[in-house]
Image 1 (cartoon, rainbow, N blue to C red):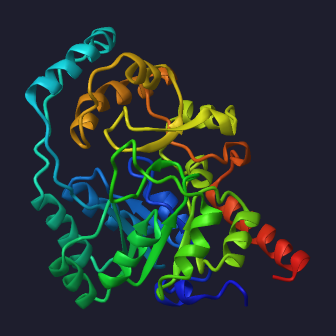
Image 2 (cartoon, rainbow, N blue to C red):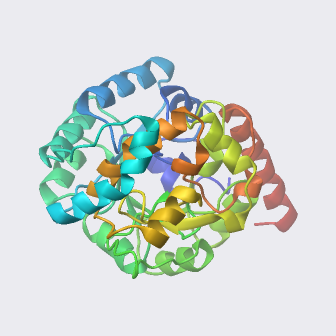
Length: 357
């Protein structure tokens, strides 16, 4: 069958469809549903504490015996000044006052937390582990491989994909610029981040690495999957289309915004977290962009704005929250994950039969 690829073989799944590790938006129910349907559900553990991750893994295991994945953020070095933090906090003070919030403190960001998360993945015998924002050190990769865990890296350029392969990963997600949420690029300097579209990126990566390539960015239905397959991808990673399913933890106001947006409403911004991320533009982003002080690096900028964004989300105040989304907003649907998955398979198969792919 055309959809049986190296990715389905490596991950032990029926279809090479991976639900993206959308940190803050995945639920055990979403992960398990995707895996039960024959894809690869992913726990978005980017912001999780070790305790939360262990609990999520155990919950997923109670819901499915099928393979699933955990996505982790690779910690990166960063520097900042107290003066820049003060300037940003002063700028954000009116937002906090309106929402009755106290001034935030900078998080600990202890790199050892990442090691603890990796330990949990190994101890819990998670079948697949994916990484965003870079490549773990050689020792970490070796420990995971010795545990028999399939490793998936992320890249936004050919050079990044080649580094992922050299590091010993089993597959690489090639993330096109259409993708929602944080960019997976290693070099996240906002003004120089490459924004290569999925259609241009996939065949170039395929031509330069020998490990399977998984397409991400703009894949919202069977057409995107089949097109990615035709370009040489052996699987697809889907985020926004799963973000709007009923099992997603995304706020109702977030989903509503996606359903009522068009592709030109979605921009890449580094103002909210300090890293480039694609989401729906709003007043908070524009205020920071046009009048704000120096944007601090991730995760410090994220520390200073996340309380405002989270509270705004709870209050349904879309103008002040983050609303990560890919560019395919017009294709987003209000359905449960199983229905979306079934229709994705049916639509892809009809495309294959139509074009004889």
